[in-house]
Image (cartoon, rainbow, N blue to C red; front, side, top):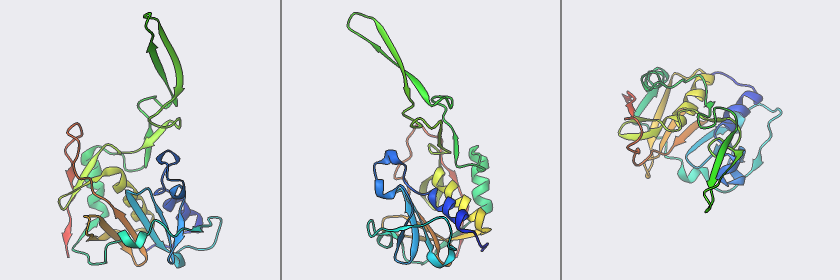
Amino acid sequence: MKVLSNSKWGRLISLFSASEEQMRPTLTKPFKQDGYICATDTHVIIRVAEHLIPEGQYKYEVLEKPSVEEVMPAHNPKFSVSLSELINAFVISGIDYSTTTVECHECDNDCEVEWKYTDEDGDEHSRFMECPCCNGTGYVPNAINRYCRIEGNNINAHWLLLLFSVMSELSVCKALVSRGSKSQLRFNLAEGVDIVIMPTAKVPDTYKTPVKIKTEKI
């Protein structure tokens, strides 16, 4: 596993934090818990052992809840997922795996959309306001409305992009996967580095059929 700087770890871990619009203020930044630096938006979690992260500009406050350990499956891998197979699935799905965000197609990166209202007299009123899809940033999570399939589990492709980003930065070519009691998947990248992703129960019919990611039995 490649050794990363404090700033590089900080940027990677922060990718997993909740946005301010998700109304979980305690989860909008990474936190320290039980000897690990963690981040989650409640759909995906990253947990990195403190000793792997050098001292530097990124500092972390202790947070006791939610308990990451409670949702972390035991390390009992049944199969593995390779970096190359993730890339292959992204290519087949038409996903640009070089970025975790893309320009918002709802506002065309203008950060605003036009709202219209017709009153009882038939007069039309309009006003430009902050885009509700990107919250005025001009960008949205890449592949957030796309899915892939791993061992019978439908996984949001954006969460897999985050997994891919960490694997790439660490030069890890294969992740060992364990399954939890609620079907959550634990991707062990190296000793002290884990990512947990919660599968989606059902993919909406309006979305494309999930691309199956090949795995290797252990």
